[in-house]
Amino acid sequence: MNRPLASIAVSLGLLIFSTSALAQSSVMIEPGDSIEQIVVKAARVRPADRQVAWQELEFTAFIHFGMNTFTDREWGTGEETPDQFAPTAFDARQWTRAFKAAGMKGVVLTAKHHDGFCLWQTDTTKHSIKHSPWRDGKGDVVRDVSEACRAEGLAFGVYLSPWDRNTKEFGKPGYNKIFQQQLRELLTNYGPVVDVWFDGAHAPRDRPEIFDWSGHYRLIRQLQPGACVSVMGPDVRWCGNEGGHTRPAEWNVVPIDSTDPRPAETSQETTEAIIMRFKDQAADLGSRDVLRSAKQLMWRPAMTNTSIRPGWFYHASQDARVRSLDNLLNIYYGSVGGNTQFLLNIPPDRRGLIHENDVQRLAELGRVLRATFATNLAEDAAVKASAVRGGDSSHGPDKTIDGKKDTYWTTDEGTTEAVLEYDLGQARSFNVAMLGEYITVGQRIEAFSLEAWQDGQWREFARATAVGYKRLLRFDEVTAQRVRLRIIQSRLCPTLSGFGLFHTPVVPASPQIRRDKAGTVTITAAEIDVLEAATGKPK
Ligand code: FUL
Image (cartoon, rainbow, N blue to C red; front, side, top):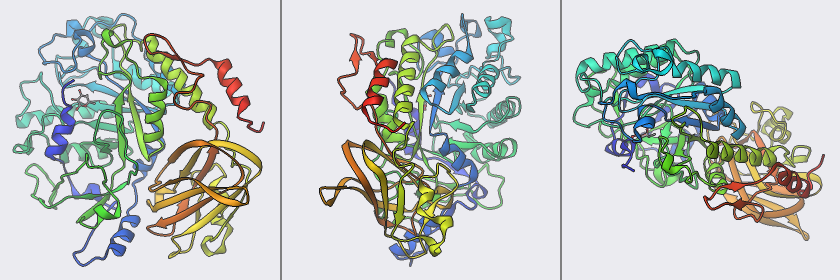
């Protein structure tokens, strides 16, 4: 497949937005600041409410459906005709049911890809479904998908490709007007939108006026203040690849390289817009080593986007190349379990349905995730902590297992190391651990370890660095009654909103997983029941 333009554009590094978008979620580093001061500044950077809500979605579906579905391409030329768009059995509810079964909580629909073909009743171009044979030109994919999302309780977002290969206006100042009119239609007529997703395709560095990013962001804030603007936007960053590869440590507070703060030519702001070079592809974006040379820090969590198949769009030739269950589980643990949102693309076929192989895989994934996370073996534990803020029960260690996301344990300012001990009441077997910080007040934990009391001593069974919104760790099965979490390093007093121990019935290469010739994995409901029973979970 073509090298994704998003990566080219991001590494070329053009991203412009107004300083108002940075309010409350960024901080300047002064030349004389010590590393200790920088780290505390980083820990004080807080997310906007929309960024917290976005992160809580955890696992979401990406949909690429449009002209390319019918031409068997990944990038259209813009010279296709609306006649070619002709799904035979379009059913958005079938899509959202499949996503829900996988445990997804939201959807980002590609409303317009690079070919410029619009999947909604737009007044901005003739290159749209209005001029297609589908439903006599009266259909509206955006409406059907947004309604199907509401019916299934899924959040709804849109991807509007800034690059448009159909309109003659592209590259001229008039295109920004068309683009903003498209945004206005999408953000006005289809209910709440939680994510507006822009890729960076065709954003040449020498012509920043091609995209009036500042104007786009202002309009989005005005029409949908709860929406995050992702990738080519201030709220959410791209993880840096499209293969589902995740970092061992993912930080939500990352430096803005503002060494080139030229005023944006098209910005209406009185303060200058900032041109940032986000190094989205670097292996480390936020550890102390990176912060040391930062000039400005901002809250910008990562999104892991990849496709369940090799292509973003549907190709019949890829029906047997749907990612395996264990591969998807690996990405899930690395992404959702690595403090990012997992945006998994599932492309509908020419019928306008999610293909049976993908539906099956999503159902398998959902079954395994539900079987794993249904029971937190630590939820009834007796828990004690080496330190509690002000000795006060409102931040006691029991807040880590009360199942509430807005309560948390913490310590006094200045206490950056602590131990929490969980007594499970009896010996339990587990192979997954979960930690979650209360990120509303920032991201703080830098290193922790997990230990089990076995044979009269504490034995370490897992160790990691960044936590953030959620950290999941998998390890060989441990059986113990007492478990302790040692917070070894933290930027400020640590917080913990969630702690869990789980037993997953499926580990990679498990003998219970069957594969047919096409690589399709099957695991039946009965097998999951048997496996669950074998985990010895309390009833
Ligand atoms: C990239 C595009 O070029 C791909 O076609 C796809 O839409 C991906 C999600 O973003 O920039």
